[in-house]
Image 1 (cartoon, rainbow, N blue to C red):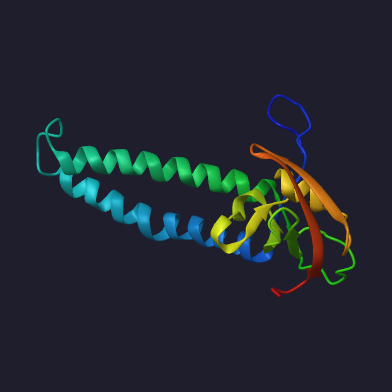
Image 2: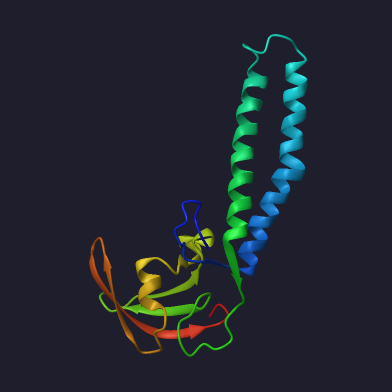
Amino acid sequence: MKRPDGVDRPKDYISREGHARLAAELDSLLRVERPRVCNNVTLAAAEGDRSENAEYIYGKKRLRQIDKRLEFLDRRLDALEVVERPRDTGKVVFLAWVELRDEEDATVKVYRLVGADETDAKAGFISWKSPVGRALLGRRIDDEVCVQTPGGEKVYTILGIYAEPP
């Protein structure tokens, strides 16, 4: 894929569920939110002096926000490649669940490698482009993975790789 300046941009990936969430947001903004705000702006404009009409000013500002988000979502959805859930869990791949043991304090963590648009630290969804995600890709069970973090080097051992949440 090429950027507007002609430079190649690497493909970005997303799960089918993540793509559906972004598409649903786009649809909701386009079919529900934007028409509602347009109607409110029209009603506020009919009240007269627009320069001191808070409803009108806020409505126009909200319309600009919605339009920017719609433009972003439209471009983003076109740029993303949907990847299906992995079947083979012999090695860490995009969308795999990975069970890790932190060698420093022996805690066990579970992460899922997802696209940048789906990251959620609380749910354990980390980007495949993050330092931990990049270090895990292609690794197998019992491999040790060293990751450089702001707090220093972390060493993890891969305990399991799953196609479904463990």
